[in-house]
Structures are given as structure tokens and as C-alpha cells.
Length: 148
Image 1 (cartoon, rainbow, N blue to C red):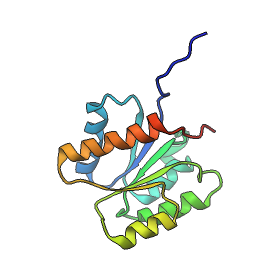
Image 2 (image 1 turned 180 degrees about the horizontal axis):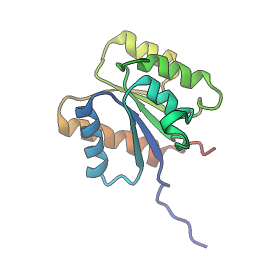
Image 3 (image 1 turned 135 degrees about the vertical axis):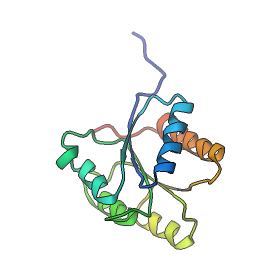
């Protein structure tokens, strides 16, 4: 019997309204040859629809990891994070806040809402790609994610 040491591919939900940041995240995944599936939603309402498999997202996979921007239309990232971490069916999903804000109040509030990590988006493309790689390395390779 043989066992693979390769981590199983995971479904990652990117909640991001900025097309440039979405593109950089996609490039980071492609650059790093990350075999995970990246699903993208562009606002807080769409994030909740994806998570609850409503409307256009009926049958969507349950993500193994969520990359969440704070500044979103409709529901902001704080509201989405609060909903995720207060719902017993979603609370186990790790949420990495990935945002341009380095405000101490946003960092503190995100952790109070039980974010698993808070990452300020680097402006430089190479640094941004490196940050995405580190998130992937840690949450996909180093730690074990819960499998429902």
C-alpha cells in the first residue's frame, strides 16, 4: 500500500471586488502551480450565496479555505466573517482576511470575529505573489484542514 505525501487539492473561495487583486491572486496560483481550485465571488452577498449554495451558486462546493477582503459592496467583509464564524455549519472553515487595510482597529476586529489570519495585501506584484504562496504553503501544506 502506498500513501501520497502530496496534499490533496482544496477548494479556495476568494471574496474580492477588485479585478486587479483578483488577477494578481490568479497569477500567484498559476505561478506557483498550485493545484487547488480558486472560486471567485465579488461581493459579500455573493459570498454568502456561494457558502449557502443559493441562486447561481446552487451546488457550489464547500470551500476548504476562504480569502476574504474587508472592503466589499453589499455586505462588507466584517459582516461576512461574522456570519461565517457564527454559523455552526461554516465556522470550521479557515478565513484569511486579505485586505489593503493595515488599520489596527480592522486587525483587532477581524481577530475578535475569529479570523484565522490577517494579511495586508502588498502593493508590489512580486510581494503579493509571495504572500499568496505563503498562505497556500501554510494552510494547504503545513496545517491540516478539516474535511467534512
